[in-house]
Length: 298
Image 1 (cartoon, rainbow, N blue to C red):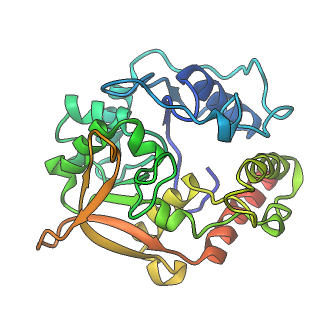
Image 2: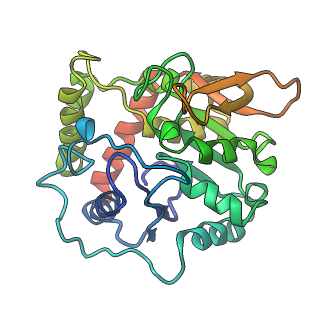
């Protein structure tokens, strides 16, 4: 919301760390707290394309966003849009943006796959789709898989195989790169002001839950998908220390390795940008700048 390179024009919610009702509540309560109640929110998918959704309240708390209690309203005045559904809203946004729309996906890929099912050429209308998800040689919900792609591997496979997204439209931020961005105590303490204290509280909560796995602090995941998008979009790869593979991605759909992502050299100039390295200081500077801007503009 407060990055100089991007304008947030809408949000679709999804099941994820917790169920859809809670993630939707968190979204609109956040927008109210951050002073941006006019950004439209559309309620999205409540479950994956097949099977049941996993959940991660054991990490993120029963509300899905531990540490936010006392900051976010239990009854926000902001409401979801109901004039059209999220599929139409996302497709309309792409048409109105005339090739400049970028989509950032920080949960399961169910919403996006449903857009592609109804509008197969949607990918031809967007500039980039940046995804937080996947892992190569590691996992966080299983030894092989990352949570978002494990939640709906069929949706992920639909996205990675969509013909209109094969033309260098996909940016993937797997655990390999997000684990480079650790919210150490020193970094968490730089979040100042009324708004910054919310982010400090959330990351402190996450740090406690993650202490046994990463005692220096928790890795943050979703903001890396934003930062990686800007690196590619603004050609700031060198400045941000952003490095990526450029390959085809496949997703295991079932069995012990459900949700595992695998890279394949496709022998062409097309593929998925798969981030594997980043300058953590540049990343945290961008996060801090956004929080400072947030304080000054509210």
